Image (tube, rainbow, N blue to C red; front, side, top):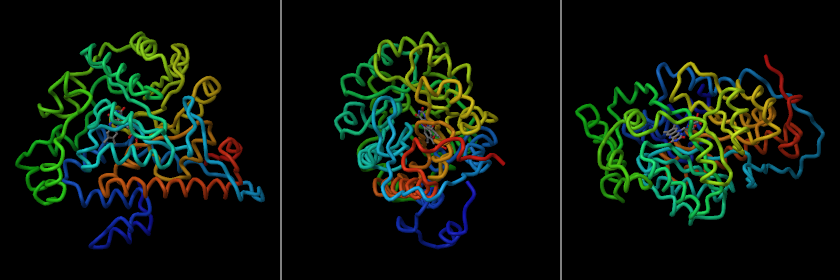
Length: 397
Ligand SMILES: Cc1cc2nc3c(=O)[nH]c(=O)nc-3n(C[C@H](O)[C@H](O)[C@H](O)COP(=O)(O)O)c2cc1C
């Protein structure tokens, strides 16, 4: 992400706190200061040369918003309906793994922020709190992200747990059939749980607050997996090794359909990038797709979700909820995706930097800033509701 001049001013300060963070880039800087290197680079990094990660955000700069004015925008409505649930704003929390490594409050902080802003909270298969606990928190919409493991009993158990916890939707991730080549993690030796190596020891020692929280607060675990697999909770391994050894590479469309049938509720495929696959998602009865390349963490050189959005919305936008996932750093990015035809946007790093920097107050602050940006920009666009945004509001350069 390109830093603006204000963020450069913040970066030049010797000390930075929550009040100095006004945008995602500021929170990224605060997270960089507060986290040991291996943890920061796990969040911030992506695959290979990280070209796709960069493009996910820069794609939004290749088109411009064209406002309509004099629209009487005193009262406007930011809400949207995704997978049968109303959200109070058109941006939600994508599922991300290992959140208690980023801040001791972990998923609980993000779930509380989702409740406050009335949006979906996405919990990962590799979460550090249980499906049951999240199910008990608040009445905002909840989505569980499923990784298909080789262990079929585990897959079955996670889906049944989602039913019992009354989750609203399951998103099956389809872009991690093998682990991405995340070279920052190779350099830092990042594993789950974290291992102290000669190169990482200094970094853990230099961040005593994080290290003390990790050592003396609740014991780290992958709550939804620990009764089935030791890897990730008691046996340290890299995320790429986890994907390569624990996940089922034979997963195919039949597997996806079987999950939908067992689940029986709102069902999303996360990581759809082609029109062909979007149409197949409709055919197997999915009710949503997340157009996503996993934040550039898997296939580097893959197209950006925003670049691919128009053709997917044209093909299936009237049959299924299309969500634009990844690269979102500004409210204007959300407005552009909605103008193309997305029902909503979602993101990971946009809130993970804030979680790592300042826990729940951090996540709430960045979500508040993004909400304010969406609201302000909709007023400036002359849009009273998200339905007022359309392709006529956009021009590509
Ligand atoms: C640290 C981190 C962990 C992630 N863990 C998962 C995961 O467990 N399951 C999943 O489907 N996607 C995971 N993702 C991908 C996100 O759900 C989302 O697709 C991605 O972050 C979007 O890109 P963005 O970070 O630019 O918003 C993860 C992303 C990050 C940054």
